Length: 369
Image 1: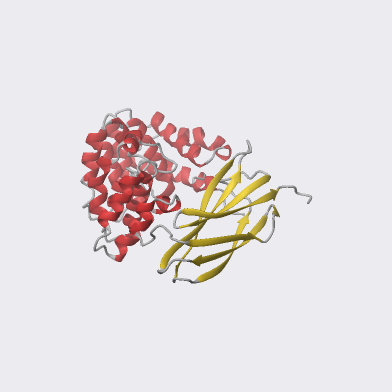
Image 2: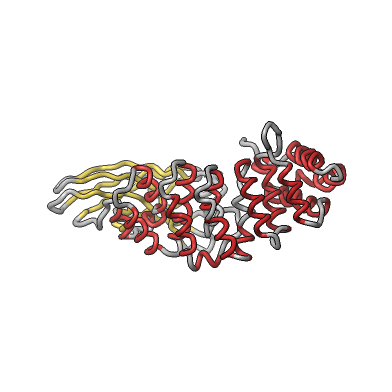
């Protein structure tokens, strides 16, 4: 069994945090801090553990945030000086976001110093929500920082739909203020930064598909291989949904005269189990065509309706008059992100984003089958 995620913030991390705060500020009540957190630690999940640390810090550190900011900064690693790093600093994010909201410049400067030792993507979001214009003005100055962690914070922390973090509704509605941050980072020398830019664009594509498709089309001209990868990764949601503009940017025009056959090896599968299926494609046109072949499983929901989830397949070029056969397998097994329900499901074949064939099957959840 894998180690529970919550153990990333375990007793050792709590004690290390207490020691670091005591070194930085000798008046810190080390024992009260531990007594407030450790008794309930086992019952808490990861984010709850971090929040309990942040809550204790709020009670025990100076109420003057400027003084507390100095203490937190002194807890970070420095020149020839050990300090806190890793998951211990998630609580610092939460503390700063909750207590430093009236001290925007001090808080953002502290989060900038923190990010090379963990990440500050969670911490900067309350400041964007509270004072977007001033916060983005400061954050946009980070895109030329020599530290790639800081540059990555500029793109990652401003993502409209950052997982595990508070959403930024104003930037979901209008992402245009993000473009002056994202565009200069398209060709960043660090893959770590470019991947973050792609993820931010993918977030935007969920609400503004045409905007991102047009962005990709404009910025792929004379693009380096690294930028092309970024743009493809940014387009992944659009490609899954069959957005014609996004597909065309990567050479997948609407399929013409493509015949598709789909056959299942079995009409009913048990859980856990594997769905096996065969695909036959033939090109009836007079030209070669690049084809992106994905598939969607329409999972049965609790109310009996079906909800599709697209899975990546393969790509190939099919010449005029050519045909090809593909065999595929899809595993149904316990995962934390989905609850499976028995009954009718549907498999759908997608070619360049368009559904060309489908077949139904039943999922049997009985343990005693």
